Image (cartoon, rainbow, N blue to C red):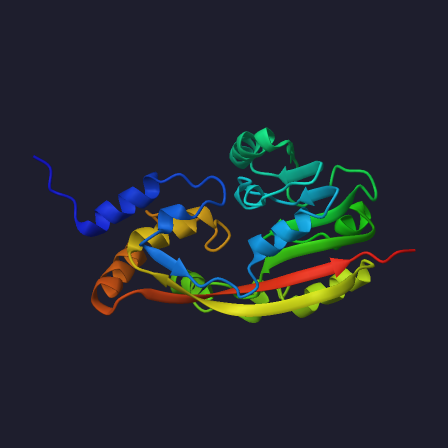
Length: 258
C-alpha cells in the first residue's frame, strides 16, 4: 500500500497537471493575486479598437485580451508564435472575423508597409520598434502594456539567487523603450509605469506561474527545484503568502504624418 501524498505533493502535482496555453490566468483564482495597473489596459485597448479600421495585435497569446474588446475593426489580425496558442487564439477569434497568423517572436512582421492604423500588444516578449513603425500607417498608433524591468524578481531570485541589473538587460526599462521607439520614428504620446504587489498563497501557484511564464526561471522543472519548492511551501504555511512585485508600463506612440 502506497504512502499517502503530503499537501506539498498534492499542490505540486495539481499545478504540474494544469494546462498552460494562452493568457488565461483564471487557474490562479483564490491561490494568487496581482494588483492591476491603474490605467486599465483592456478597457483602453477596447476603446481604441472601436475607432480603428485595421488593427494588429502582436503576440496575442490565446487571444483572450483581444477577444475582450466589445468591437473589433473590420480588419483585425493577430500574431502568435507558440503553436498551442495559435490554435487556441484561432478558435477564439475566428468566429469574430479576426485572422490569427503564426509568426515566430523576433521574426519580421509578415505584413505590408502601412497596413494598420492601430497596433496593440499586451506583454510582448520584445517590442520590435522598427517593424511596428513600418506596419503602421501615417498617423497610426501603437498602444501596449509592457512588462517592465525586474518584474517578479523576488520569485526569480528565490530560485536563482541575487540577480544584477545586467541580468535583466535593461531592455525592458521604459526610458530605454522610449528612446528606441523615438529612434524608430515614433512620437511618444503617453508613458506610465507602476510596480504592483503580487501574492502567492500556496506552492502550487508558484509552480504554475513558473510553468506558464517560462522566462522567469529558464528550464524550470519541479524535480530540479524540489528542495527549494518544499522550503518555500513550508515558509508560506508558516508565514503566509510569498510576496513579489510585478513591473508594468503603458506606452502609447504615434507615427507622424508626412
